[in-house]
Image (tube, rainbow, N blue to C red):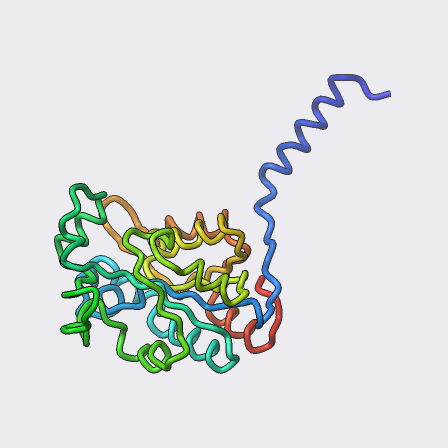
Length: 247
């Protein structure tokens, strides 16, 4: 019989092996009838060189080829009749009357990020910071893409994205957009809490690089901890075209 000390040692070794063996990779089975592409903030202020945040996100956007990769996802989704949803970020004049703000909220209000003149008018919207990147317009404005009400912070708790997905029988999401550690990660967390399976396309997003840290690198860690799968754009396109699982 094994003595007590030996058994304890074996148990400790087993625990350490499990603790450091790495995270599992659940993946996500692809079902075109239950799957949608969701993009957050595919807007000029994040993705255009003329956008108000380009100074802090530009290097990450260029490095990841984010603009082209998001477009590749739109193309493959439309080709395969996968529903596309856009969760945008808008601020109206009344939003500037808030009495308190977090750090990024304060910055966004100060630089007039995503500003629109009115909730019921698109006057001045065309080519503004709140508008879609020009090359995305054929996909977003095709009459089929669902443009949700705007989220006001970072996650979809303040808009109707979950309702729009549920009403279409969708419970699997391919997630991309801007920015990685803010709206993308917040959408990931809330969608998971709401019972969705979520795959994050890691090079179809990017993040700010500021003295406090690299938002994109921070997000990658949490994507891996949380998502059903974290994949490249090439892998996502292949899975959609071949109707295979995301791994």
